[in-house]
Image 1: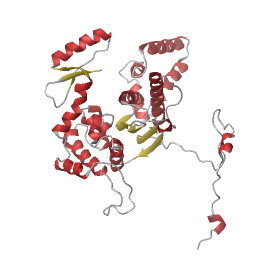
Image 2: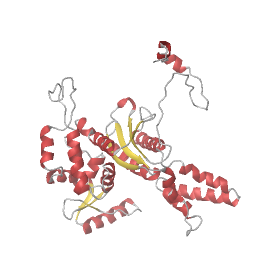
Image 3: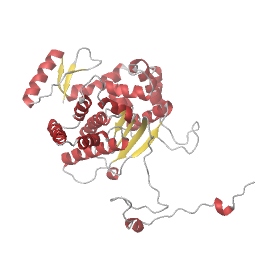
Image 4: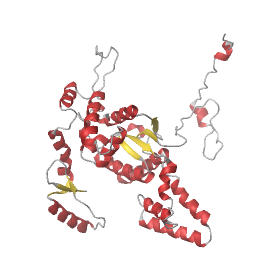
Length: 381
């Protein structure tokens, strides 16, 4: 017997706040926080209390403006990789479009990841701290690190060991946190973009969207959704031809991109050629198949969706998911058109050394072997 009265079944209607009411909201419990009365919903990040977790994060430019060209996409890609190393985040795959980006990533267990900065029994007492300072060099200059070391030394000379440890803890708090990783990546890129383009103000439409992803099938599906973005946008017919994505980077020979996709597919990191590439390529062309409106096989009412053609899908099935020699050659074209020098290893090394002297570069540049071209090497800028 249902003892609940009809009155109890009916929930109170959600209060709709007018724009002017929202504008007059008072400061909340903490400084800078807006007080949200009962009935005002707010979006929160869902994070596990402990252990590792995978996320799909996405953010769009202000007003959805198409602001990113090849240089901006390349810059974002480089900053993303650098900030991921700093934050301890693993990038599975990503895509940088003209007005937004997607990243599929894994945040490791923070307590386990931080153990690398603990001093072991057989080591000196400050060995862990030295490893932490070396790690900070991922994003901080030598001048900043010298200043930090001097500050730590000064605090300890005054007997303020707790203050020194607290100072180091401020850096550790930034590790293994999806919110801080994306926030710092967007802020760093915004500063670079505004300076390069002589603009001011915000670059991004909102904070960022974040979805927690779990399970092998869910990760593979989300990775395909991300790597198919350029196909859905009608930019390329084959996702391998888009350079600013995880799959495009992996198809061009990037080992780190291949390792990321192997992890997303739950396959050994050295199995790209033998297992991951054919399996993922077939999956991409299945998931990315274009949808025509009112198709009998899909049912009426389906909206048209751009994607790969049935002919392209059939060809990939024919090739059993392998990259054809002609497509591999197309992926190498960027090395020929964007390189500073290309040729044999000795020649490129000589040109690289000359370039470094002319540009007064101290960091050694190592020529890169161009896969699929025999003995060609390239030095890129």
